[in-house]
Length: 120
Image (cartoon, rainbow, N blue to C red):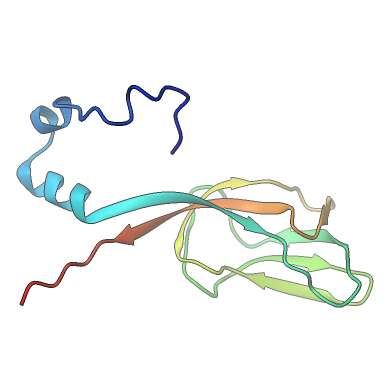
């Protein structure tokens, strides 16, 4: 989450206190979400690009780590790409039939990171 205005980054909104219950505030403090890009990894030696064959997901889907997200085809093989993270799909950057270069963002997903603090 980036902002072009630097003055708002250190200001805490009191509005969240009036619109949220104490339980929701506690949950908001313990979990942070982050938008991450999921690039096409190199699928084989000398492979510079792959064709997107089909998607197994759609925007809004919740996916688990290692769940298949798409099938791609290089000049050597068809490959099923799996998710590296658990999260919610926010953007799909290619359509079936498109050619994606290695390193290009396939999807963007929102992942939730829990902050665990043990007090013993």
